[in-house]
Amino acid sequence: MKKYLLIESNDPFDNRGVERFYGLAAQLASLDHQVTLFLVQNGVLPARRGAAAPGLEAAAAAGVEIVADDFSLRERGIDAASLAPAVRAAPIDRVIDELAAGARAIWH
Amino acid sequence: MTAKTTLTFLLMDGPFENARSTTAMRLIDAAVRRGHDVNVFAYEGAVSLAFAKQTAHANALHGRNAEEENHPLPRKWIAALMAKAAEQGTQLRWVNCGLCVDERGVNEAIPGTSRGGPADFWKMTLASDNTLVIPTK
Image (spheres, rainbow over the protein chains, first blue to last red):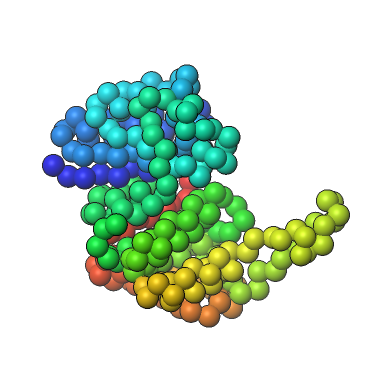
């Protein structure tokens, strides 16, 4: 089992590559790797409860841990209580901790 | 907190253009704050982040002078990160791609930064525990 950190900075309504990135996260998790998907910048927009983000839900169902940058959420007026159940807020320090722990990191 | 490591970041975006630059600065800040040594290789437009002649300006449209506008300058952020690293006892090494600097005419970089080439990035990655590349769109 390997540890992966996938960082998504784009909004899926703005960039078609985002759904494929979610798919990559889900696929890695389905292969029993430990996968964290860190949402940052406009990447946090689909983290809202009720947002149409089937790829994000599928990634969560596949075992991907989904984390949203708390600063990006605040910038966009999204409070932690309005996040989808599969998403939790965390500071950007989480990325540093994952890198320090040796996670293979990909930025999109 | 995890044990002290060396982390390398490759940046490509120029200043004043994209949230990726701000996020990169936040990541470097977090790494320094958590006691890690940090290498930064600034490539392509990112070499202008440390350009020493960045100048704050007034905003006539909103009737604010330069002080009131408080325009954020990436060169000041980098200097602040270097000062924080020194306080923390960690290393923040910032290398600008020399050819990218020449192309853009931004040779006057702030103190503490240096000039190098892609081979330096390769050496950084070899000497690091992990590397994050933040590409342009």
